Image 1 (cartoon, one colour):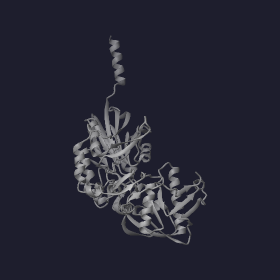
Image 2 (cartoon, one colour):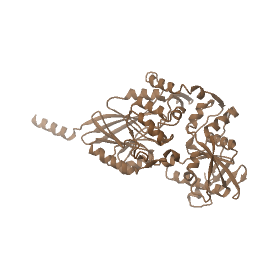
Image 3 (cartoon, one colour):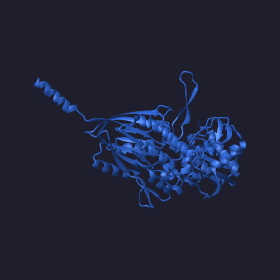
Image 4 (cartoon, helix red, strand yellow):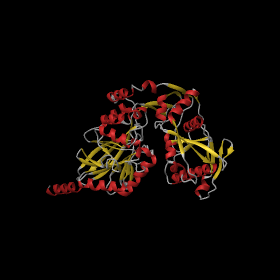
Length: 511
């Protein structure tokens, strides 16, 4: 009997572990989708599209409350601002008020939080009742970080250290005037500094709350796998239905627009400071009266009541669905480019796919729909270039996109109006510089010595090199004083019925 007891004691001594089970609830890229919205999926039995409501503040908070316990860590990975009119009208203040209801354990600042300027962001964050993180954004005018570099939270007997990272490429995706007094610190350095401090505080689990995108999160995992256990991500709008595991680091992300709430269930060996397992479930926030948080929905209704009559005004009828797209031509992108060209009497218009934030099903078009499709309120800029420079711009843009695609990145497409062109991607990737097959304005070839008037939004103009690379000619633009959203609304009101058919204006002849 003693031998048996000794064996049992030895067995338990070898294998006993201080195991804790914790849930991490997370979401990202909410983009002020404070009201429920319609989505669709194919019915497996009938093959027909089924439409239903998801998201909104009421559903989001309802689902958070459904799963939240004392053993739950709640994280928001950024870009809560920008996407609906109320965010614009309040310069992000509406989202801080709502996040105060959600009460996350930590929120990391995303790039779209800067859409109303660094000064506006700094002001509204003072009303946050939760921890705001951003280890790599330094505000020059107050000589300090925008947010905390990290925070420590204890949940269910597990000590979590959370480091917050804002998109390192902030300058490239934001209007320059909105980040003119910001310095981006070296991301690797601030992560390493955070790790050192959190290890001093004897954290069991280190979480990187990263608004950087899945590809960048993989790189972080490669560099810091020895210390970081989990990366909760945002920015790329990627729904990861199960965690990606890179060098033992669990990477999660919950899509966008609060269609899903990420629910990561982990087991932690506290004695060994190790995450033993991680199971992810993206919970679709389907409208459910038993879950819905009515006070949160009421708060949203109160916020928008002042603007509701204007936003619900019907301005036209859409006869075909408008579809957005980041890396392809779309009928919505072409419609906008056409409107810009016609309203400014230009020869050519460019519209970036990333500037279109949602699609629209056929039916009534309201003014609020256009605010959500084009929330940024960018000014329209015009600039004149020679035909020779125009072709140089197009070739550079093609190569920029091809190189990104080759590297596995998403390559933002510029929808065009007035212009059409074709190219041979195989030649381009093989190093043959003669890959531009055709370049036309209307039916006429672009002439090197002719001058063409281009119109684009202020983002494309301010990020000219990002889209068009280096060109020989100095390109100087002028603001028209017109706002993109206003031009689109005016165009729809004049057309009344909108039937936008996708045209093939950009052709890769090698495909």
